[in-house]
Length: 393
Image (cartoon, rainbow, N blue to C red):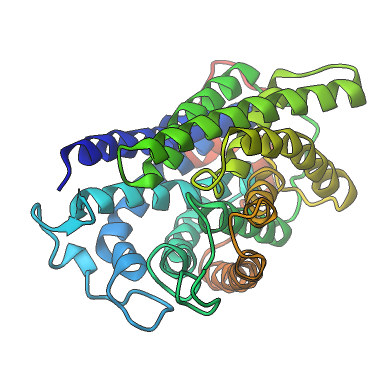
């Protein structure tokens, strides 16, 4: 065990949890209408709790167990079987590696929340999130990070896919799942109201930005120069994408908005995530500069042209950003084109199919969407019996 590595990954674990609680909750909550903000908080909080328990019981074993099939890790580490304070994973206590990866298992299904806010049935959300993390997310983790079929020595030969911190594992899977659910749910009855609190959106985005240092820097799994470089390129990409998003918005609409610039931040962060361990600062500048415009145009395409009500633009920002960053690894010579593109296709098809099947199963057991009256009145008071503010909007 290396004490410096252990101390850094303990810090990174706290930073990644900060991304969901309260970062993502505030970011998404501010974008929703006032009568639904508490339901968004509830979704993020409940998912964090449920995924933590399921990761302990089954998820960690599926993702990082010793299974030899290449498809999943098996059930040998169910309930942390055989893992104690003295077990090691590289230079880290394995129990710490478990906790660090648990925070990724929390935020990935939480990202999907943005696609279905203001109309999802709470029971359906919990059931879907649980099954999706175990049957979609955890196997993909094994394929890419657990030595499975997409890693080095797998189906792409000696040089497998390069995904440093989750362009495929986190952002592609969550983005595509969000798109599938948005299509299956259908659009909200009323899409005219703007975000109810842009200030909260900014605070949430800022917390996500800070937490992302643990997300990407921690994925080095060591306190070394690689971790420092990952943090630096993460920051440069986020800052650049924020500026290009705001500039593109100013050119197109005559004004640069607060919600726009912070959405650009998230686009830059998602795009650099897979590449953050393989590229330098100039490449990060390029990735961020393109991401701010690319993801903004993806929002317009999905929302206005294809007319899919992915409420908070999960696929356009996270999905497109993660896919773009994964492709840029090959474009910049840091990975194999066959492995990068092939893995995107394999994981993409798997995610869409599994998400659709899980949603169908859950829909057969509980309603997928709240009724029209509940949607009109807002989920906060009707579903959870609480109201965020003394006034409604």
